[in-house]
Amino acid sequence: MRVVTTAQPLDVQPTPLALLLLGREADPKSERGVECPGDLPSPSDPNLVARARAAKEKLGDKVFILGHHYQRDEVIEFADVTGDSFKLAKDAAAKPEAEYIVFCGVHFMAESADILTTDDQKVVLPDLAAGCSMADMATAEQVAECWDVLTEAGIADVTVPVSYMNSSADIKAFTGKHGGTICTSSNAKRALDWAFEQGEKVLFLPDQHLGRNTAVRDMGMSLDDCVLYNPHKPNGGLTVEQLRNAKMILWRGHCSVHGRFSVESVEDVRARIPGVNVLVHPECKHEVVAAADYVGSTEYIIKALEAAPAGSKWAIGTELNLVRRLANRFAAEDKEVVFLDKTVCFCSTMNRIDLPHLVWTLESLAEGNLVNQIQVDKETESFAKLALERMLTLP
Image (cartoon, rainbow, N blue to C red; front, side, top):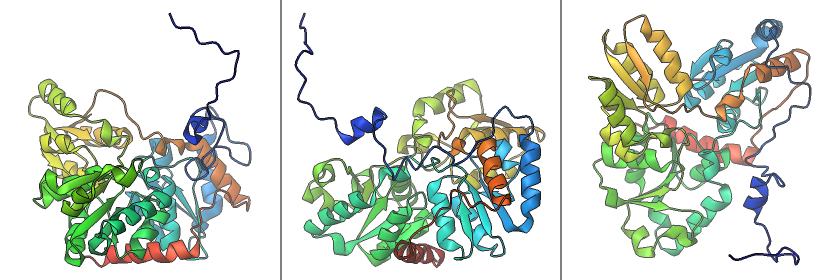
C-alpha cells in the first residue's frame, strides 16, 4: 500500500475552478449574489400570499410582473403575464407606463427586458443568483477567442453568428457586432435560413442541441456538416480542416434540464403508456428528438396540448413545473400528461425565484427601495439590440 505523507506541503496550486467548487472564491459573472440586502421572509410564513397581494396592490400600475413558464405555481399566481423569455421581454417593452418590471425568470431574461424597455423603467430580478447554466457556458472572452480561431482559419469573414435567446447580453452584443442575429426555439430555422443567405457558415451559440436539431431535422443537413467547438480546448478541439469543411460550428453548451432526457426515457414511457405521444423541446439531444413524435418550443408544446383530442396521452420532455401545470390544466379535458423522465428535474436556477424572494422584492419596491436592478451598459445594449432587431425583421 502506498502511503502519502503530509508532513511536507504539496506544491500544488488550486485552479480558480477548484477554489470556486470549494466555496473559497466567487465568479462575479455567474454567481451574481445569493444574499438579499435585507431580511428575507421565512418560507414557512403563512402570511406570504397576503403580503404579496398587499404589496402588489400598493404598487398598482407602477409594477408589471413577468412569469416564465418554468416558474413555481406560487410565483405564477402573481404574474401579470406568462410566457417564454422573448415573449415576456416584448410584453415588458409594450408596458412603458410600468416603472418596475419584476422578471420572475433568470438573469439573461432580465437583461433582455432591460435592453428592450425604456431608460425610465427599472428591471428587477427577485434573486440575483437565478442564472442559467446554458447561458454561462459561453463567456464574452471565450467567444472572442473562438472568433480569433475562425479568423486564423480564414473563415471568419464567411461565418455568421446566430445566438439563441438563452444567452447573456454580452453574447447578444457580440452577435450584433459581427453581423449576426438572435433566434428563439420557435424561429431557429428562419434565423439559420437568413444566416446562410449572408454567409457560408454559422457559429451557433450557446446551445449545441438546438443548433444541431434545427440544421439536421429542419434543414436537411447531415451530422457531418456540424462540428462541436469546445471552448476549453485549444482551437476548440478542432482542426483547421474540420472548421473549413463545416457548415454549422456548434458551441459546446446545453440545457441542464433538457439534456437529462434520453432515448431510454422515450422507450420506457412508450412501454408504460401504450399509445402515448412523445413531445419534446428542441434543446433535447438529437437522438431524443429523433425518437420523439413531436418537437417544438414551449409555446408549441402548450398549443399542441390545447389542440389535442380528449383521451389522448402525452409524455412531455421539458421542465417539470410546466409539465405539472399542464397535467393539472388538461386533466379536466381527459388528457393524460406525464413527465418524460422518471427522475424529477426542475430548473434549479429558475426555482430560486420563490415566494419569499418575490414578497421581499415587492415590499421593498412598495417602500420606495429599488433592489436587484438589472442594467445592461449602453454599448452592450446597442449591439445586443441590433441583433434582436435583426431577428424581429426575419422573413
